Length: 328
Image 1 (cartoon, rainbow, N blue to C red):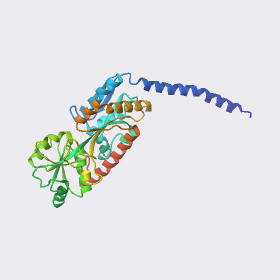
Image 2 (image 1 turned 90 degrees about the vertical axis):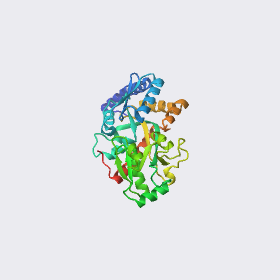
Image 3 (image 1 turned 30 degrees about the vertical axis):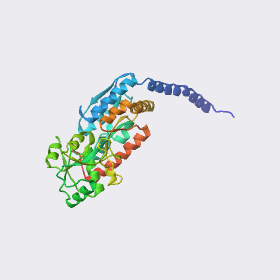
Image 4 (image 1 turned 180 degrees about the vertical axis):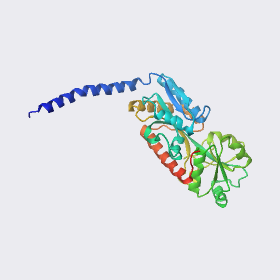
């Protein structure tokens, strides 16, 4: 077969481009192999001293040790963690600016009418870190010792039982709204900018769905009564408490932490980070330190973490819409 001059020249040009494409791929692979060659910044949307900040610093220290470069936590608060997320969305997608992702990002996707980014589209999931259940707990004056008794009491007093939280869109808030939706009750949400506990202890508010670590002392001292945990399994810290799912099948509400990156971050870098984080979570000593924080390590593949984030975003969208909640 005789080739035309035009076809021949196109063939030659294409063949000549193949080594260039191979070199480009090799450069990207080499960059991932060497990564990181300078400090990596993990952007946290919560203040210093919070559970997110404490956990992020543990992870940063561990990754620094494993990868031989500093992983530095930066706290960028504001707009319910949206300032942090927005800064990472618009950062260079090279693996050197990462986002500390939490359930708040999934909730905010619906809670805020307008955002400068789309969390699902613009953040690449990298790895899961930890899940932290909450505790459904009431003031001791509430005449209920079980979830079933509380549901009956709430149905007999619609709108008269106050539910506290540290703010609209917090895990306390949406866990309570999910309870409202699934139990068919109406608890009145009272958000607090300062601590919710003085009013909870005095009985001005009657119930909260509070993360387990900061609930233990109140329950063990008898100052508040735990009725159930909100995770999928009973907690070793409070083994006598059932899960809410034992009364409301399918109920689950947990805080969770993970790592994300700008969406165009090279896949080889994302895969390396996922591998290193999962290796850390498999280490017995590091795993024990995370469990001390009141949670359960959450090692996931990139695909599984992506599916988890999408599922959480869809679930909380349904709850936020049901409650009619809007960001302050």
